[in-house]
Length: 181
Image (cartoon, rainbow, N blue to C red; front, side):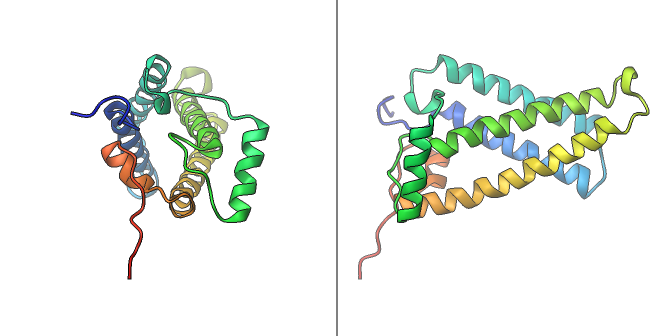
């Protein structure tokens, strides 16, 4: 059994990450492949926002520093940009400054999607196009941000020497194995 000091991402962080990812992918497939936006779409959407809220609550209560939240300031962002330009990023225990802000933006977009999805089904906005149009625009924005997230995981893994995908699977710090010839 691992101690808290060894654990980078607790099980509940990893579970919420992958469940939210699976939910967003499912919602995208329902909307843009199967054109299903009825009760199942709503149920999965509400499950996703519920998982985000639970993740935020657990993050606020967690004793694991990498699972807690912080607000990276301008100095941290500038340092991170300078490191990116130099082609080497300091390994972080948890999210780097851009990663932390990206998490907040992803969660904000998910919350806005839940709100606009709900609004589009209320009597007050029945027949109105703007809630549905805004919901679709937010959906595409979230998908774009997810694409940036996946690309950033690849780039940051390479530049920091950390295997970020492995960390999100097993929860422990995972350096990239160097190739010896």
